[in-house]
View 1 (cartoon, rainbow, N blue to C red):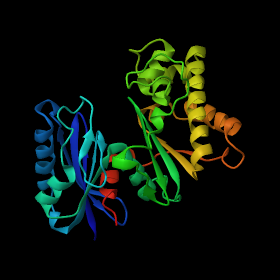
View 2: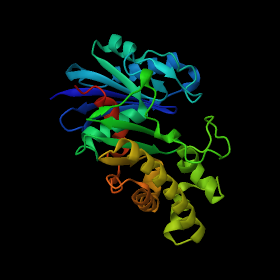
View 3: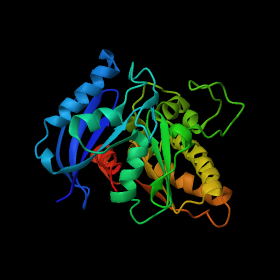
View 4: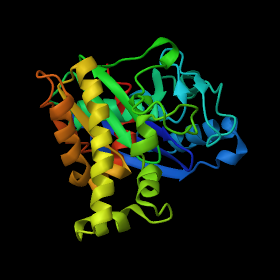
Length: 296
């Protein structure tokens, strides 16, 4: 059996797992708190220590690391990061894991890792050309072309969450105005409903119960999502869109139905019926995706 080691490093937890290359099955896994307040050097050391405690490491053929921040996919260095991971910028993920395990290591942004995992083992395995979007607290995404991630210089580019929908909108926290994330992220949806402290499940329950304002809010969000997807479809012409994250898990067809309708109206004839699918790997998706970065 060929096995890969997957590492997922986020703001609140670090996970490590062994993945069967043939099936994508998680064979063993463990997790610990990130303790991000102790700085990037400490976080990286904790991730390595966690991985070293997994059983059957002798069978591992490579290491994949999915982490928050902008990561140069060639060097494995964190180029930029937010304060969710203080001191994370500059950490040499590839170098550190290769030194610790004596194996080839590959590092990339966590959303890019999710896209690779879904492409190889999840809902995207039948497609060679797809766009992945993860909708949660923010909106991230990745472009997979001919089965491979598309990167710009130094890992930049392929950020559909920053696609501009409404240039005259109020300034957003990332410095843009009117980007897709500003209108379709989890916090944005609750703010649009007028109850930012309400939970997503509560809003979904209101919508399923037929509450008009909830239905109207999600229809408007779905429409904005569809505008973004139509723009991406017209530019890239993917075989499919894969959507994951807490927002999709929570609202599902309440967003996807109006998004599909908008894509059909705004997309060019060749792409207006591009499938919009839900990611399928579930809770283990970050580990599977991270490991998949190390696939040949």
